[in-house]
Length: 263
Image 1 (cartoon, rainbow, N blue to C red):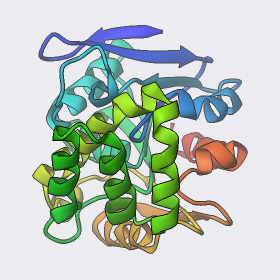
Image 2: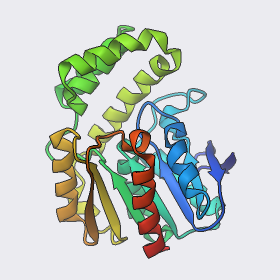
Image 3: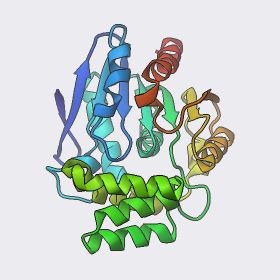
Image 4: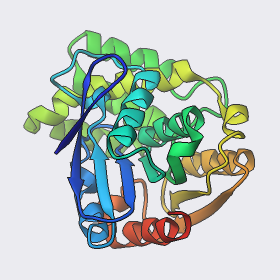
């Protein structure tokens, strides 16, 4: 574990393993970075892999967090590591934070790997689902909030969203993270459509997607591909939004190949 001090004085925490060029990972929702452990283990023989525990999902901190605060956390970690350049990997909402960090400090990042970041391409990401999920959290119904999020935002099949909801009572940690996921959704909605701004991100970028992921995630990657000046699209055949769990070797290989090019 390494720590850094963010701009507002908050202690930033990150796991640190391996030696070599630095790969900095920003995890998705409902996680603390541990789901990227198998990918990190495959990269660690050649790279120093640092997984930030995003403050949005720190149960020891008072929610909610803003994307701007998370960007400050990322830059604090980069400074603690020596100032870059590093390869920044962002998964899902962590990919949105990665894009904003690359805008805030271009010199810090030699390249990006963005795994299906849910960037806003219309008026919002969640729309009415955001308010409905927030209302469910306020009523003390995290299972209902998660179901709304998975069905109406992630766009999983209704049966699958309902099945995951049924698992929630048996996982106190996951139950505690659901309100943070809804806070994360609201933070992206507040950020709004930023595709024009992302045109200033000049770092070579891999836009990583799963061949079986919900179609809207691929559409968002297409929109990013049209906005970023140095982007290439890579698809993981047979994988979805959780390829880092189901095919960590494939994900690690994409990251390694890009890291060797840009670092």
